[in-house]
Length: 245
Image (tube, rainbow, N blue to C red; front, top):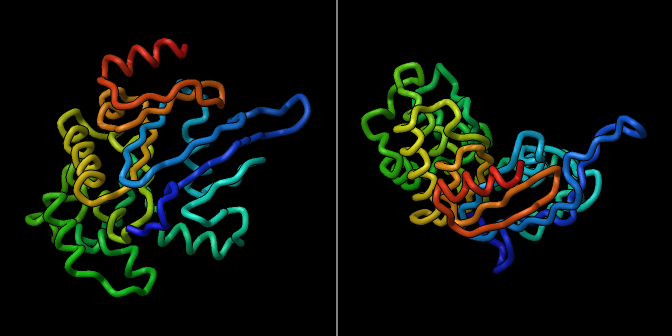
């Protein structure tokens, strides 16, 4: 994991995202300020259309705000050209999606090390072995995705996300394609990546059970942060979501 002093890992300040103009103008975000601290687990929640995914895309450098700024460590993303932004995302930001995005012709281990291979970097074998053990893939490392369960595929995706030792992992509905048992397994591993590996994690989710694993929950409505809370139980989170409607 890369660190930069004592400041936040990621900071979004007064973020505005607007689409269209005139009568067709639509605001996805309306002045959101949010920081992700070190070794933290943040869940971003809200009704459909509240701006959850837009916020994640801006914080990850996948999209540009109409106004406001995003910093990863001390680096202001608006100061970077496309090539530098690509390099920063490759080295400092990792993603986990509900679709897994594993290459079917590669084994689990080959998928895990793929980001390093693409970058032409040496594989840290000690770190690789630690990830394989932490994510319980010792007996599955030679298997291809088609030979793995959904939960095992998501474990591979998580290990791949951590292989580059990123500053932050963003996960978009990471349990969306999993059954309840596999979902709990993956969320426990995300929790361990924070507690045992010192990672910073932010997830976008609609699932109160998933958000209950987080240290902090940020609730959005109509493009604004309307509530922030520390750790809550799933029933408490469900009540908070009902209050947003």
